[in-house]
Length: 304
Image: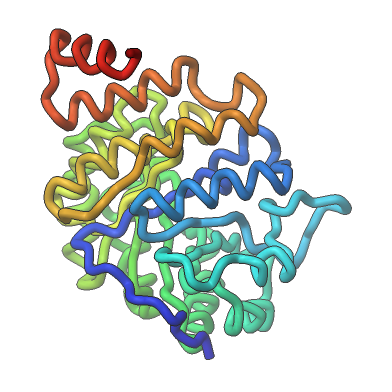
C-alpha cells in the first residue's frame, strides 16, 4: 500500500498542480537533462504548489530510448524527495500500461495518478482507476479534448468515471478552444453527475488559460493545473505563477514565485517565454496593486 509520507500536508481550498515537466516537455520531446529536472523540481517545491506532476508513467509501447519524463522509470521516481512539502503525481495513458504495472507505484513517493480519458478508453481507464485506488493512490480522470464533447457525451463520460470511484475528474481543454463561459457550463454539467472533486486543465491558444482556470474555480473546480511561465503543448498552459498569486489571496498560503526566475538559466533561451523575469515581476506588481510610480521607486531602491 502507498504509505503516507512523513510530513504535514497543508490544508488548501484549491489544489494547484504543476505539470511543467509533463506538459512543458512537449517543447523538447520530454528530453530534460538531470540538472534541468532538478532546477524545476527545486523551485516548484519551494513555490507553494500542492502537486508536481513529474511525467508520463508508461510501461508498454515505449520507444527504444524514451526520455525520462516520457516514461518515468523506477529509479527516477524513487529518487524524488520524500520529505518535500508537496505530493508527486504521474499521468498515465491507459493504452501504455496494464493494471499490474500500477503496483510499482505503491511504495514510491508518487501519490497522485491521473489517467487520460476519452470515450474510446473509458472501460480500461475505469479499471485502472479502481486498481490505483486500491493501492491507496489519489486518482484523477482527465477528460481530454473536452471542447469536442457535447453535453450528452460529457454527461455519459462523467457518469462512467464517477462509477469507477475516481477522487477527482478533470475537464482538459486540450485544444485551447474554450472561453470562461464555456468552462462554467462544463464544470456545471460535470457537477450534475459527480459529487467528488472537479479539476480543470487549461491551454492558452486564445490567451484565456488563466481566465479559464479562474472561471473553473469560481464554478466549483478545486484542482487546477499550471506550468512555470505557461510553457506547454500548443499555445501553452496557464502560468502557475499567476495561479499561485491568485490562490494565495484566499488560501493565505505562503508562495515563492521569485525563485522561478532562476530556472531558465538551465535551459535554451527559447524554452521559456521572452522577458520571463520581467513577467514574473509584473505578477508581483499586479498582486500588490502597484502603479508605475511605485514600481519605479522600488526599482530605484533595489538598484542602489
